[in-house]
Image (cartoon, rainbow, N blue to C red; front, side):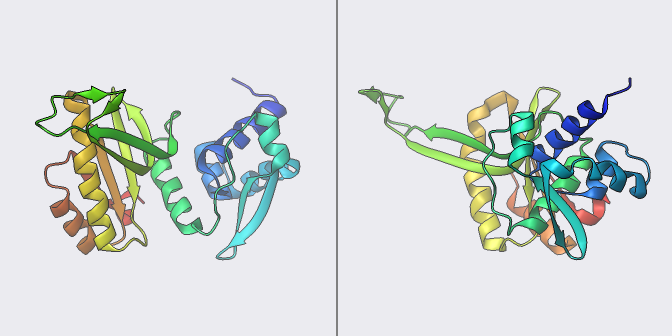
Amino acid sequence: MKYSTQERIESLLTTIDQLDMVKIKHLQQIHDLKSYRNACRVVKQLGPYVNEAYYMKEKVIYLNKQGKELIGSTKEDNKRHFIAHTFLRNEVFIYFKCPHDWKNEHLLETILVPENSFGIQFKHVNLGTKKKVISDASFKRNGYLHLIEVDNARKMIDNKKKIETYKNVLPAFKEQTPILYFFTTTEDRKRKLKEQLQGVRNQVFTFKDIR
């Protein structure tokens, strides 16, 4: 199926919006733009709709106001000092074959009701403690929610705290328990994460595993 130039431009802009910021090689892989040279040529067509910057001597792009307006994006501008984290998350997106419903920063929330409260509510206020956790990304596949954590700079003590929060929140899903994926930097961190994730439906990879 052939796409018009405008359709291709809007498709590329939608991907950039979905991922927040991309390298040219990300678009090359996601949209099958063949050679890197051809990908650079295609990206030039996006000129009026994107801002360009350089990270580690490599060009990166993100939507400007005109780009957002063209595709109807209502996403707020994200802070751009987590660039390394964003690009690793993009690698995970590509590893999972570019899920169409991929969402960055997915909020999970539940209310933990004390065992002796019987779920009683007073004036529509539940006698429980609200617990929430924000995953780095999420998508659904085969009816199950897949939750993504990108661990490239987080302290292990912070990983442990977040995993404990997941252990409080995930039981609310009962028989459709989400799968929690951690992508980390070293085999040692991978081992420690797998130990901490006992009791949670999970998979842990290093970034080397998916490249």
